[in-house]
Image (cartoon, rainbow, N blue to C red; front, top):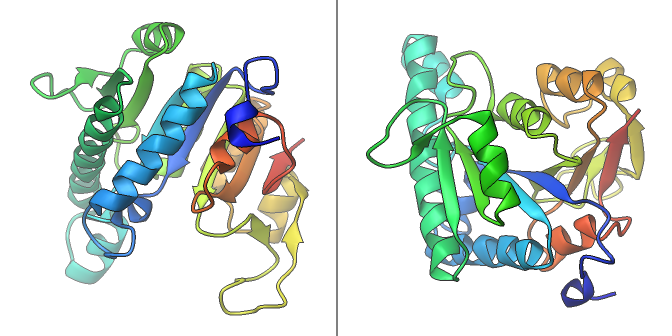
Length: 246
């Protein structure tokens, strides 16, 4: 089945939360926002949404500013550095909103930090209503609190909107027993349990995020965002990437 054939009758999930790293928006440039990468990701989201899937997105800010790294290397107060990182996710969210809307799909950016001149404040019921109306919802500013990653924000928002699955977009095909870039013979897992991820220290998401997903019975699919049509394949239930579940 091709991505274009993932009609509502074929989809496995009705509502998904897609976690995209800030680095994905940097594309081949390596920093900031690469227009080509932005448009490509927007098209992938459009294809999923127009097949009848309700799509929410959490985007990181590492392409602009990474709070934990800045605190460690530049001596910034961790809380201040994390808030700066949250601002970076808002910039990315607005860029993604613009790219998706240029393709004709209504999008709303909801921020955990109030900034009403440029985006809506996060209200759970409002977010769900936007999704029900067929709008893409981009959650920005993480949880609004320092010391929490955007992975944790993704798990939290997915639970709050009752998403069917959390889609963790990466640059590799799934979760491996070791770095596939450094080790060509690395083995990819097709399925893992939450406890296996935590006990073996596998770098899927941080432990807080995994714990949230486990407590709320929220499956995670880790997949390659760089391959065209993969978002559609995941929502259609094709066995790609790595499934983390109970």
